[in-house]
Length: 216
Image (cartoon, rainbow, N blue to C red; front, side):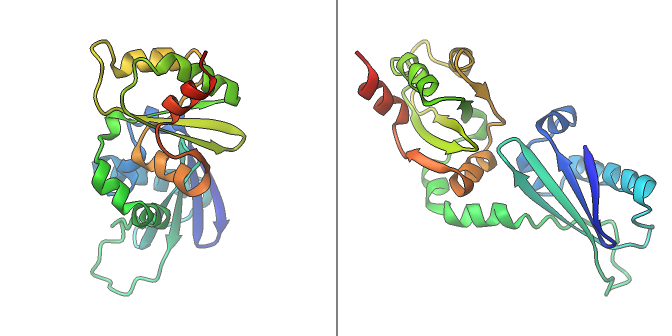
């Protein structure tokens, strides 16, 4: 967890995938305040107080959570004017403008697909050849939806199951994909990040399309 002072009234915190795993947090947890986010916030404030003398007990704060890449998140803490002295200065306001923008942009998609984040799988590959080889192996066992993106010189394959064949499950798919690529935090926010910042190469049935185009 890295904290950087941006200005007299603002701090920037960067959380990596490792930080999230260690705290048993998901990206979605940081959109809506919960016990976990409250604990994270208090830890941040303790560290900020120790390192920068940033706040005191009467300092009202605004917190914004913004995804950084597919696996990380940036939290911006800003001191604000306390207009209502009766308010609790430790109350959180997670605005996450980027997440709201993604949700508005992809509203129809979210409503019609309605998949659980637990079923979502996101893997990245260094080359398109790796994606092709993985798709050739996946094509006979994956019966769901798939999309292909490019971001930061890597290729991202997003899988969402629809109906499984008898032997198909996420563990098997992950084991197969690990031979060719790297798994990322697989949540709806990660997908929305790719929708917003990545280049969509194949919108639907990516696995089937690649296997058909490059299969024997």
